[in-house]
Length: 336
Ligand SMILES: Nc1ncnc2c1ncn2[C@@H]1O[C@H](COP(=O)(O)OP(=O)(O)OP(=O)(O)O)[C@@H](O)[C@H]1O
Ligand SMILES: [Mg+2]
Image (cartoon, rainbow, N blue to C red; front, side):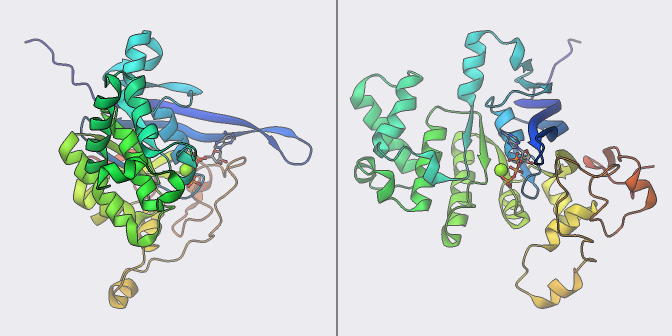
């Protein structure tokens, strides 16, 4: 029987992205291991939700997956092919297929361009439309898709005439305009008014239904991760100082978190019912401060904050092991 090779949309293999920075007043050089040996698979139409605190490397990982940053080592495969081994045509196809939505919708849009100019540019650049009339039709369709109606009105507006939520919808329209297979949504709701956040998450999920887009959804807020994956399913990956410390099917991670860090992230989500919130309280973190990424602790990088730390945690780094089906965790409580 011929062997079938299953190819995922994106695969990151032992990915490392290091930054060389000046350290301290003497200007000594230091290394920030922003992404430090990450393996990640994103399937066609799949959702991977990446959660972790500020500075743990989420944006760096997202940008590297989208081809905006070069890995220090390791590789990115797009539909089974390493992006460093692609010819120009294949590489362009990969770059079109992976689009990114950044956190700040204010910085992402050129203030001197109308919504029509912003949205028609990528359509022209990737030769997806011919001429202005076709561009106008396509832009109207995109605006309707992201809920900015009537499109004729929004087309003429400048970014300063839009609310934060509307701007982010324009940014999302721009990302999907070139028919990407994957959208890296990097904290797409963080800078948006709380009342509009769920609307943006629902829009992303609706677009997945309609267009079949896969997502790498990045957030520091486990509440948003839970909302997104409760509706969309997929995988949750928890990141701490450059490493994935827990990963598995979303439902499994939410119902049976194993890593003390994941439990702390879940615990930080406000719960409306005080009864539940009292019952599920875990012992507090030993320290609220994230260690400096320039000199992370030895062993398990989380041990300085971990309520369950044991002597081994300060010495050896725990491997990522499968504890339940498809559910991996890097913690000495579970590794042998
Ligand atoms: N261009 C750069 N030069 C030097 N250091 C960088 C650079 N970009 C990121 N870093 C460092 O790499 C680490 C990871 O940063 P990154 O922005 O990926 O984290 P993040 O998880 O997205 O954080 P946030 O929640 O604040 O967006 C941080 O310590 C950051 O200071
Ligand atoms: Mg970030």
